[in-house]
Length: 291
Ligand SMILES: [Mn+2]
Image (cartoon, rainbow, N blue to C red; front, side, top):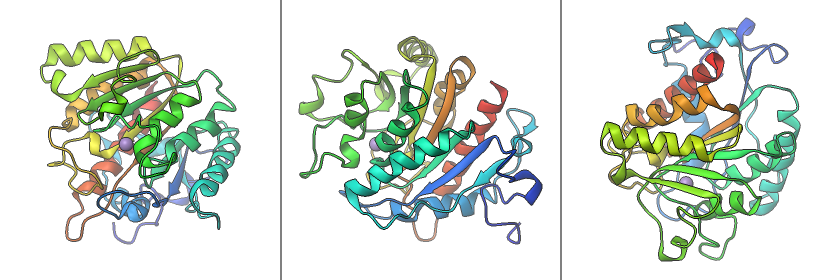
């Protein structure tokens, strides 16, 4: 396996042809507004490295999703920094979505999501966003920056998108007025502990979303016991299977046109976090293929 090509999945040339691939993987190693633990800039490379160890036969879907074709792009590294980087990312996302493929972005900090959504909206103006995250990310600004990772979903909301969020267990007093109001439907992690409650939350999310959906998975939405390598870990997250309970029907019943997995910050001596992220990205590609 270690000798396999250095692309997502470690795939041979016939499964990575850009013209025929169903999925475009965009590594976005953006890390500039990190508030606690660093390392998300190394996330995309670590996830791609780990993806080469993910079994290509999907044990839930009983298929080799890689047969749909997965093309890994070079990491997005314009010279610009901060807000200017994000503006260029929005333009790149708008260009890539025109290729008619499902855009799969690997972060990087969560600040990249509003830029990616902005680009995707140029083709899908009625786009809504499904978010898995520990944090509501609805702050107006954080540490003086409007484009901070802690404001990612407020910037998405500012674009006029509806948002359904799951796994949430951290938000501030300033966000109270936005959580579970208007265009935001919030499922708190502590309220989806039983199968029945989880099912209710899933249905509510689906009802709230429009037909065209962008999915953003902040890896800290999962339990930190499963994904310790993330910048701002928070106890009590979704289990692997709970996350899939949310994601499976979103892909099955909506038109998911792009998704991202962000905030992976690889730890020294442990590859579990990036492996979980890689397997989750591959599983979501599988859900998209089946839809
Ligand atoms: Mn987040």
